[in-house]
Length: 311
Image (tube, rainbow, N blue to C red; front, side, top):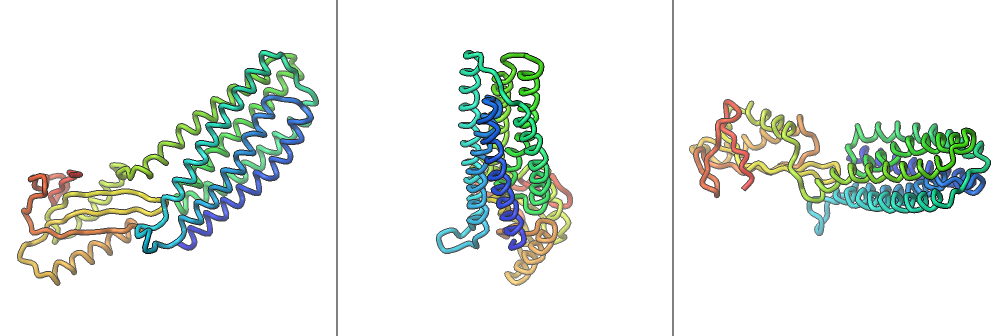
């Protein structure tokens, strides 16, 4: 967990450094060219900086250990930081679209396109390097805050490429209106990226169940234990990069408390190998005991009976 926290912080700090450098470059380019597309790119980078700072704060809080007031840890701080980013991206998209419409109606033209093209090309190279590091960190930690930040920077690749195309068409090909039209397209792209990123964030904040394939893999591990004859009331959720699971299991009603405890320890050990870092809560029941809804386990995974009733 300490290594994951360090990786997440490194990705957030790299994101902040990249945003600061690009903010200075794009500020000069937007001032010298008067390009709406470049101005949109500048606004996006400014929000990148704010969002990256929020990401750093989020992953730092999420890495703090559980305490008396937060017994399940601070993992949801990542989701909150990611939601803050999504709000900023949405605001940025609306502002860029509004500016683009104004420039299109006014018939504004682009000047000194060479500088804007050079800056956008440099931004693409730096962003590619950052996204590569972010993907490495996400594979290692599964951080949703870094994932959302990476989605934003991946959209920046398309954004910077669109700026180059807009400048070339407007300044060199003489297609007046190409720059603000590309600005509108950039705004739409950012809005779509914010919508996609919001799905995973809302799932965490609302304690959405694991994907079915992950739950099936979890049940398969339980099915391999010879002393378990049924599983029911399985409940799962994710907070930050930590998973939580609770469920009831059927065991021989003639088992002693000590024997049942041994079985629970064995289950926890097997699950820890397949699902490291997962917090697991197991409740043993005598075989045949029905749940609160009055339903017994179902024959789903041999050799055990499995009931995924969430009541």
